[in-house]
Length: 272
Image 1 (tube, rainbow, N blue to C red):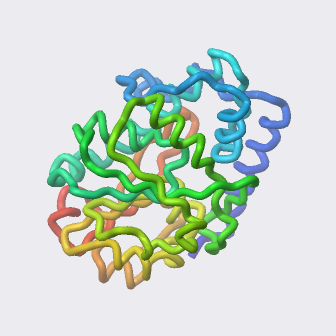
Image 2 (tube, rainbow, N blue to C red):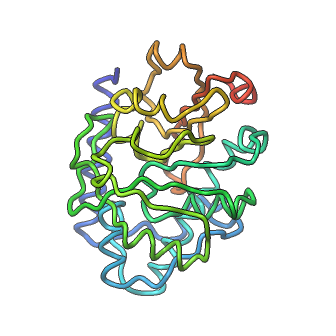
């Protein structure tokens, strides 16, 4: 359940982002969280042309980037910084995790976390399965319902960015070709995660019956969630924990990630 105050705060943030976008203003680089933005860069942003700019705009409508080096650098720093914020919160869990044999990311966007995890964790040869869908409109909600029109990604853009970064062992699964069902994927997976997708824009409850079928006893699930999120009894019975993480814009307060696993050892290093 979410409170009226939480919903009002989210409405304010969306209206503010839209206002700044219409003014064609971007958060300048000096507004990034430097503790994250100045870390080692694993993700490399390609040159931003019209096609890639359109893909970025759909996925992150708060940005209004341009086809120049300043925008390319801002996007690269923000993508790396976001990944570092998530990694630092998850490091105790990820470093204790045996090298996975198969990973699933739901809604990878343009692949920042695929590149980051493969290079930072030495998972270059680990197969990553990427569940994404093409879209022509952003239909984001806050822990909202599940619809087949939810996807606003660009599969061509995702593939292009991954190829630019030179990472191997990944496969994109088109959500439309999979009838928008997760249980059609070639699971099970040792790690299932969704950053700013399932759990954040769309309630995890709408996906959980399918997610359960993709996770074995030792599998780990990670999902970005809002401040107003509280795990259901069903998730608590499965096994879960919540961990805060820092965000790339210095003004943004931390968010949380939901970790789920049937194996309590997977969650032992984080407090619920």
